[in-house]
Image (cartoon, rainbow, N blue to C red; front, side, top):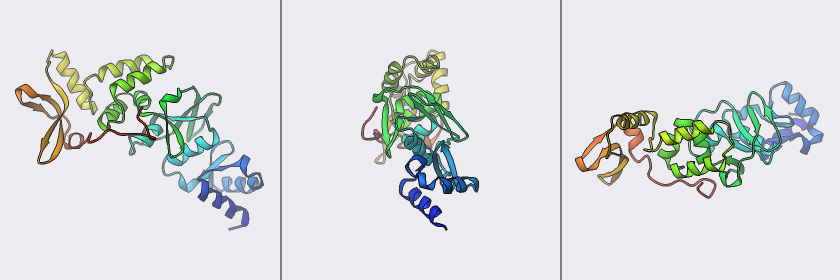
Length: 250
C-alpha cells in the first residue's frame, strides 16, 4: 500500500468517513481509490470505504459528517433507534438548506424541530415518535410494541410538524392505531371488532405465568376470554420495559 492509500485507510479507521475538505493533500489518492471502487462517495466530497457499506450506519454517519445540521429520517432513523433489523434501501435525511439525491442517500429541505431529534452514536436522528408516523402502519405498530413511542407522543410529533406533506394520512393512521396494534394482523383484528360493534376488549393485556409476563393480543378480562392473533413472537415479553433513545424519550 502506497503512502497516500495508507493515510486514507488510517483516516477511515479513525473516523469511519473521509471529508475531502479536511484532507486536501489526499485528493488525488481519493480519486484513484474511487475509480477502482475502494472508496464510495456518499455525498460530494464525503467518502467511505466501499467494504463498510454492508449496512446503512456508515452512510448515516457520512451524511452527519458532511451535513452537520442534517437529521436522519425514515427507515434509517428507525433502524438506529427502535427497529435494528429493518432493511434500509436508501438513507434519507432532512436539512434546512441542502438537497441531495443518489443511490445511497436522499436529503430533502425540511426543518425538524429540535425537540423531535435525538442523538445516536453522534448522529442526529428523528425521534421514534416522528419516525413511526413516517413509516405508516408497520412503523407505528413496531414503535408501540417496543415502547419506543406512545400514541400520545406520536400525536405530539404530528402537532409539532403541521405543514409536512402527507400529514392527513399520518393522522388517519394514528387514529386507526387507537387500540395500539403491535402488528398489521392485530390492526385488522381491531378494525373487525370495532366494525362489528364489539366493545369491552383490551389490547396487549399483560398476564403473569410462571414468573414471566405475557401480552394477550386481545382480551376480555371480565369474561376471561383471550384472542391470540399472531403468535408467541409478538406477545411473550415484547414490551418488557420502556425504551430510551439518545438519553431521553420523545
